[in-house]
Amino acid sequence: MTALLEVRDVEARYGDALALSRISLEVAEQQTLAVIGANGAGKSTLLRCLAGLMPVSAGQIRFRGESLDRVPAHRRVAAGISLVPEGRRLFASLTVTDNLLVGAHQRRPGPWDLDAVFEALPLVAQRRDRYAGALSGGEQQAVAIGRALMANPELLLLDEVSLGLAPVVIKQVYEVLPAIKAAGTTVLVVEQDVRQALAVADEVHCLLEGRTTLTGPAGSVSQEEVARAYFGV
Amino acid sequence: MDLTNAVLQGVLLGGLYAIFATGLSLVFGVMRIVNLAHGDFATLAAFVALVLVTGVGLPVWATLLVVVPVLALLGYAVQRLLLQRALSPSPLPVLLVTFALSIVIQNGLLEVFSSDQNRLRLGRLDTASLHVGAFALGVYPLLVFVVAVLILAGLALFLSRTRTGRAMRATSDDREAAQLAGVDHRHVYGVATALAFATVAVAGVLSGAQTSFTPSSGPSLLIFAFEVVIIGGLGNLWGSLAGGIVLGVAQNVGAWVDPAQQVLAGHLVFLLVLALRPQGLFGRAVPA
Image (cartoon, rainbow over all chains, first blue to last red; front, side):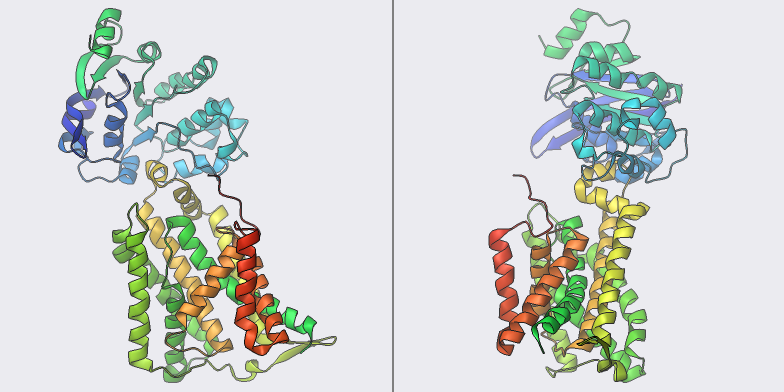
């Protein structure tokens, strides 16, 4: 199978500090990859590089075999890459419906439209006329996912979807993932919550201080391996 | 002129001030740019209209068909080629660029047109008035007020109903998140500036037919626009109209008390609002 996303020897820096050091990974079409790691491991930086919010200082990112060098963030959405950013980042002064409609700005064809999102995310449908700034954390996270789906992505990047949410809400939010995968979407999840990540992923990739410490099929990595890779002990 | 009449004239003048203010407010709201050349672009529009009237012989209303699109295109170009390059986390570089633009425009106009007073002549419309009961309202100020309301309503519809308008509001809320949703923020910034320049073109031409202007009229227009934005509340379209009316009424009532104190009265009301209600009459307080 050809890889939808190919990351080769990617480096990223904040000033002099190296945030990612020669990261390589591949995500095959319709697969789910979980990138796990502790705080500051470089997970979010990796996603920012993939989404085009941050330049890579070395290495290359290819999507469908095409280099993403110099492709700005909004063109990557048009190409089929959508990021649900850490901290939801909704448009607070817009209604939920308007937030979703902005997500469809590129008018990419596909299975997702307002009705489909409302059906897959009842949490969003109930709040469609509210201002996004007035929602609870879980509702905001659901809207953020819905907004990304509206772009009809081929590759969906989820950054710390569970952060700051109650377990019952996390469960609700993750319930939408099967529907997303069923639509043929490839998913890259970034999580601190290892159990949650391993439960949804086909492959796992662990980062520690900007370096890869473990890769493998999610089903066959042992808990000790993960713990060692995660904490570096 | 009695007091009621002064208030009525002030309300109508408020419409013109609202058009001036709305472009300033839009550019600040979307890009957090304070355009110090805002008033000078209005003066520039008035001079272009003057050339079209005296040189080509167009009637004043028809000059809008030329001046508005030209200024809108200029606005898009100024944003993409100049202001975008100066945008940074610090507001200072872009502020300096607009300050420089202000100086360049004023001196450019001075070079071409000298410092004479100019006015766009409307013919019969200059003096036409409507008598409503005991009041005499100028037809032209009334028309300007109607145009102001139409412009504000059009902008409100654009922002709330269109794809680009939605993208503009989203970009104003969170630029990076808008990029992630597929919005090209630089294009949105260009469109916002184009709209602002289109409105300032209308304001410049309409004002140029109401009062005389010189190459250095810009800064005083800018002050009025600032005051309207502050009085009405930042980022509120209809607040701009309310702010314009408050400033217009204050100036006209001031002039009724003492003709020499017209502008001072406006400034005093502005300071009063700033002291008592700094978020403006219709603005929301910004949480710390």
